[in-house]
Amino acid sequence: MRYLLRRLLFAVLLVFVVSSAALLLVEAAPGDSVDAFDLDPAVAAAKRHRLGLARPVLVRYGAWLARAVRLDLGESVKYGRPVGQLVAERAGKTALLGATALVLATLVGVPAGIITGSRHTAATAVARALSIV
Image 1 (spheres, rainbow, N blue to C red):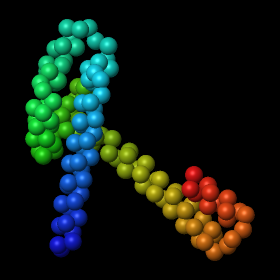
Image 2 (cartoon, rainbow, N blue to C red; image 1 turned 135 degrees about the vertical axis):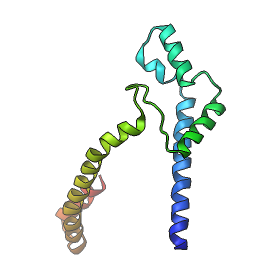
Image 3 (cartoon, rainbow, N blue to C red; image 1 turned 180 degrees about the horizontal axis):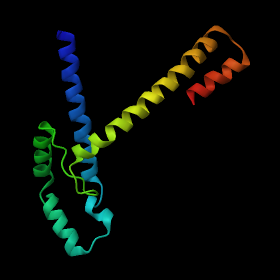
Image 4 (cartoon, one colour; image 1 turned 180 degrees about the vertical axis):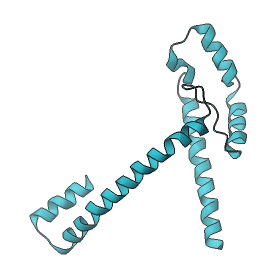
């Protein structure tokens, strides 16, 4: 139980660090998400104000962190809908894609690993090189 608790805490810390780094990298890039839409300057300014992009970075980061703790992913700038809904709509297809990739990788990788591990021929050398690529 103690091991699982440590792993869970590490996973939470990892999600926090990676998501914080992603957010801060986006902040470091020139422009913002509203610039991608080529809007009229007045409309863009209103959208920036509504999204809170005019506030200082640390204030936005604190607000983002408070929402993230509540699992509130905010609103999509592109679709104008809650991100949580968009993720939920696409989760099934993403899971299907991931499961299909896992099955295919297993069906190809296990036999290839057995063959290349048991024989030492030119074909196995090519198979090893392809698996690395």
